[in-house]
Image 1: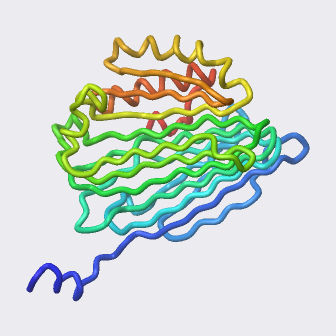
Image 2 (image 1 turned 90 degrees about the vertical axis):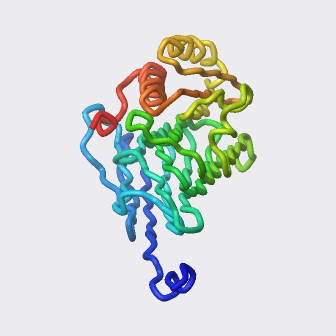
Amino acid sequence: MTATAGEAAFPLQRARGAAEVTFKAVGGTTRLDVLRQEGCCKVRLPRTHDGVPLAVLINTAGGVTGGDDLGYAVGWGAGTRATATTQAAERIYRRASGRGRIVSRLTIAADAVAEWLPQETIVFDRAGLERRLEVETTASASLTAVEQVVLGRTASGEEVREAAITDAWRVRRDGKLIYADTLRLDGDIRAALAGPATGRGGRAFATILHIAPDAEQRLEAARDLIAGLGADGVDAGASAFDGLLAIRLLAPGGRAIRDGVVRFLEAFRGRSLPRNWSC
């Protein structure tokens, strides 16, 4: 029996899921507004000690592989403040065919304070991923967002030789596109990241955005924070324009990038990350 015939006779089960959570302001307090979940995507709302609501997004399939399709939507109503994160690192496993797809949509109304703080995405050898983060925000709102990609668990001796990754950000403020970034890696990952202008051999990278009225005023403080990450082997840079602060981090492996992201975000935000980041 050929592989094609076998796949036709015994189609592989694919993970499908979608989750939506939105918040509203009631008497100056942020409350849950809408909660929907289906398939493998779930949401939990644990108690917090600082009074800021926390939405924890969960993929009960345990990872993503070719043909899986996951969607998340988080909305912050006018004047709300809340954080969205993931239960654990997302894992992108070797695929038989196709790519896994993850689309996250964030909607942030006037005067809201939003945080999008998922844990890292770990990509395994011969994995395929198409990920997209779409943001609709407003001039008076604030958003701090992070995404991390780790190519294999270097501490376990894993090496990613080949993979297909497309990772796109699209951010609009009051309907106007203000930030567009697309990363594409396809084929020989080691060669693609070996060059001095690409990855210098790094195996983990992260992007942090802060979009707020004060974003440009915080550039020097952000540069001071990332300057201290070099001792841990993390290369980083920051720039700001048009109410947007962008930070890039590059590291030799997952532990270094995670430690660098944690140190930066906790200092920049002035408070600890969600407790599940420590689990």
